Image 1 (spheres, rainbow, N blue to C red):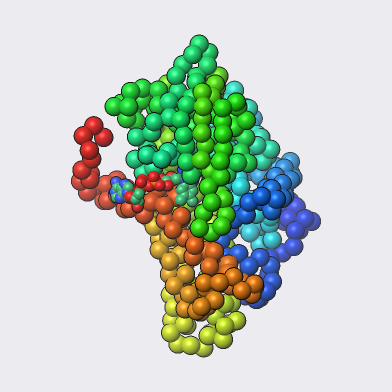
Image 2: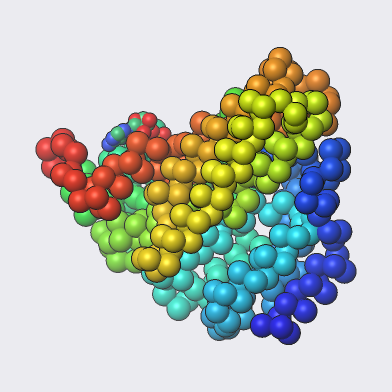
Length: 396
Ligand SMILES: Cc1cc2nc3c(=O)[nH]c(=O)nc-3n(C[C@H](O)[C@H](O)[C@H](O)COP(=O)(O)OP(=O)(O)OC[C@H]3O[C@@H](n4cnc5c(N)ncnc54)[C@H](O)[C@@H]3O)c2cc1C
């Protein structure tokens, strides 16, 4: 452990500055409360290029995939070793690497669990080195929470499959090299039993990625149109009509990511609230102090609950922590709105203020991504509390 810690410390210290002090001095470092990238165009391209070059250096130094299997580029150490490197890294001003979230937390683990040796060898090293980015091609205009309604089809043609349909809300598809796609290979009435997963190369003829602009002004999502896209049989992930099994792994990874308090979606919101209250001259106001105290407490409870659930079940904390995270986000935003007043509705150019407006505009997305709040509540009710299943339409 000590050797790894020393190597990680030396790696980070040689390349990036330490983060601003714990107080997050006003005006220093990044002003963003939302850790995920929100840009598009040249600014985003530059950010992705920086992230790729950073990730390649980290991977080559053996610090990117510390707990991954050595045959696919990992270091072969434990999850505790990986956590240690992340903790050390968190003390530094690292480049924004949120473009790798889907690759590393959602698609990569699915390939590791369901891929053939060939698929693992082809994709895992390049995904972890950041040479290729992966996206998730699940949602469709008529299939979101009810994913088993998906209509994109894959039809076998000799050694190939021909895929036709439309995906939507595909995060980062515009800079991705590969997409994990679910397609219908059985009858629509088969629902989840007639779905197969594929790894589709995004530059294949017939793949058309079109941006969707969000209320935040960013274009993080895309529509992906697939017009008779031919993929080889070797790109099938898991069994024919076994895509639901594959999807469950992917969705589990996505839920864990959303529930991970260190997922990088929020960047030190509570400390930033303290700094904001001081900056706005409200840090002696009794009502503000009370809300700051509660914000801090909620953050601590989230942390402890995550640890408790993980140690009790051995599994990532999932739905409970994700719901707490989105509820906390709303609480922080309520306080930020009180502190900023009318500044919350305009980009005045003042450091550290519009960052809160951006979070306010982006917050609803986090209540939907990785399974909406309502779906998380259904999961807790049915799978954790053992309550009766909600009525489903015939055949579901
Ligand atoms: C930030 C973000 C990133 C995303 N990234 C991707 C991506 O990379 N790839 C991808 O494939 N998809 C992605 N999505 C899409 C996401 O998976 C879907 O938006 C989500 O599954 C909800 O589906 P929907 O939008 O079709 O809403 P719907 O499923 O139509 O839901 C509409 C409303 O009805 C409620 N509802 C639906 N069913 C029930 C029920 N059974 N009980 C109670 N309430 C219910 C929902 O909670 C919601 O409020 C992303 C979404 C967001 C916000």
